[in-house]
Length: 194
Image (cartoon, rainbow, N blue to C red; front, side, top):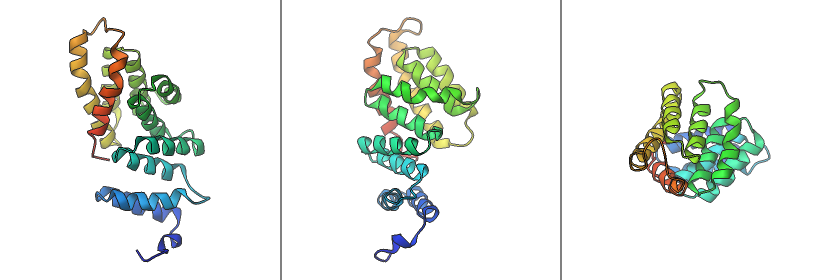
C-alpha cells in the first residue's frame, strides 16, 4: 500500500483486507489493518474481536484480552468474542472471571454451540470432567459454522483425556483447578488454524 492509503479505506474494506491477510498467514498485515480499524471513531466490535484474535495467535495474550473486552463493550451480544475472552481468562488462571464472562452464553439456544462450549468450560472450572467432555463434544457436533473453533475444542478434549484418566472420572481431586490454565494454554497455543 502507498503511504497514508489506509485512511482511504472504510471499516468494511479494512476488515476484509485483514481477514484476507490473516487467511494468507500474514499476521503483521492483518494486525496493521485492524489497528487502523479500531483507531477510528467508527470502530466496530468485530474489528476489536479480530484484532484480539490475531493477538492471541501471536501469543500477546494481554493485548488479546484488552481487544476482546473492547469488543464486548461495543457489543455485549458478540458471543464468539465472549467465548474467546473466557478462554483467555481461563488460560491466565482467572477462573472466576472466566465464569463471569461465559455466563451470558447460557442465554443462547439449547443447541447453540457457543452455549455448549461456554458451559463446558464452566464445567471444567468446577472439575466436572465428564460434563465438560459431554458439553464440548455436543458443541462440536452442533457447530457447522466454525471449523477452527471445533479444532480448538478437540485439542482441549485431547489435553483433558490424560487428566481425566489420572484423576478418575467420578471423584476428581480439588487440585485439578491448578491444572486448568496449563491445560487450556496447551490446547489454545497449539492452534494455528484461525
